[in-house]
Length: 372
Image (tube, rainbow, N blue to C red; front, side):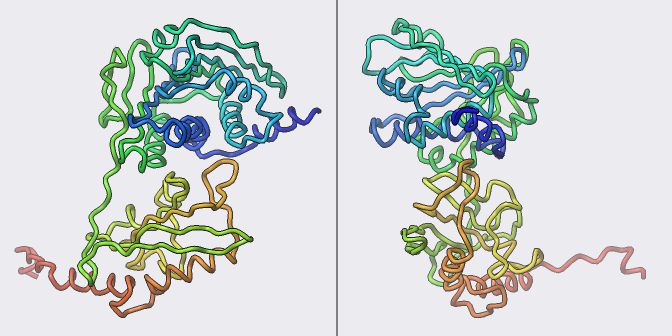
């Protein structure tokens, strides 16, 4: 078995949380859109599953790939561009056959090609020129990239795709909330499209009435001793001969809510840890047992820059030495779960919970209880 076949075989064994498998596809376009093309308009991204054909269509309004970028992309295995490797890891994980339509903003013609994953071999069909209007006719965008993923490795039920839509909304919430990304996710069944940005789901017959994923609302935070609602963090952790930059904030929920509490960890502005209630970062030193007040009140968003997230982008890779330094920083602000003084968050939480209990209106005694 040649190295490329071995690589594909390993990719097929990779585990991705359902939403994260799409991240490598989104990220390549999003990073280019924000960092290199410097455009002021948001990237618009469509993800559509067709139940009738068992196909995925993914397209955008980016500047598209240039001819030379497409050549590099098709020869990704000979290069060391990790973004290109990640891009194809996700594609191979999802399907066996891929069809590309691409229109660069700076070129007069577009390009089309096919890829087939056959027996751990990725067969590439030569690039063909297409007319500039071809991409617009298919997507209503002047330029960008359309990928049709055929022969999917598993079909999607509507509820499965709703989970994916919610995960992608949370993963990319920083981009969506700041109007850098508009993400449309639809499920086609028969002649109708289910718009997964709405609850209950809207049924559409055309895409022009679809809505992008809504912005994520942040929970209300209580006032701290200084009148602020957040304690900002800006620290550097030296680990494995590199610097990990920690930034973000900690706070206290104004109302206890285990489902919202916890620490949400980001990398490159993407949510990596915290997408599910029980997946949040809740070190026992800070949060105590499941019934501890901190598990219902302590809230924070932290960016860990320059820290690897692994091939699947859904887990941080660090060891006990790194976590020890991270916990030292957090404990200096929060205190451990037993801390009672109000100069740290753990003590403030106890004081807030005590105050809420004291201010709780008395329970009315029912006539039945009076007769006892």
